[in-house]
Length: 201
Image 1 (tube, rainbow, N blue to C red):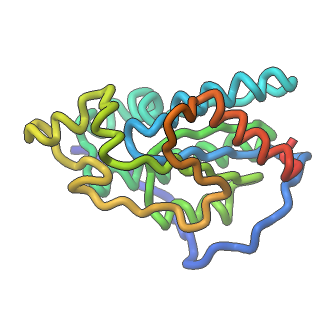
Image 2 (image 1 turned 30 degrees about the vertical axis):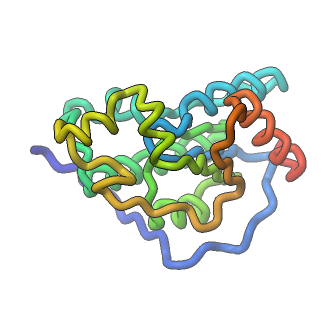
């Protein structure tokens, strides 16, 4: 198996003091949560709202990026700890590359590693972190990709939140917990409300 080599990814060990958003530069809205929590759906809904305000964000989705960027480098079924962290760091770098050129980037990935959250907050322009906090039981009920049932039936392993430890964000800018009738549209409106209140746009 080929190995991805990375330039130094020094996250440091502490979170920086919250910064004001520089509206002259790009921004990164980073949506994280376990598989099935609704990251991609929320990103798409948020994209619609931001488009309606005259901006054109770039959407970076974890599943799509894995297929597009790394299909020939790492096997599609490699979801181990090291591979997940390598992918997460690559997503952070790509988000940085685009945001540093002035783009608004909406990145939706699992990448639940404290090292990545710290690096993002220290390095990504206009970094705003959204955590979709959803109970495992609810994720197992949804299971649109059959990930959780396949795990129970021992068809797969390395499932974040089950046999693979997750590191929840300690300082997410917004935590959206699961509630009945809390639709993706309502979640996107709540994210947008917070962003506007914090003068993100």
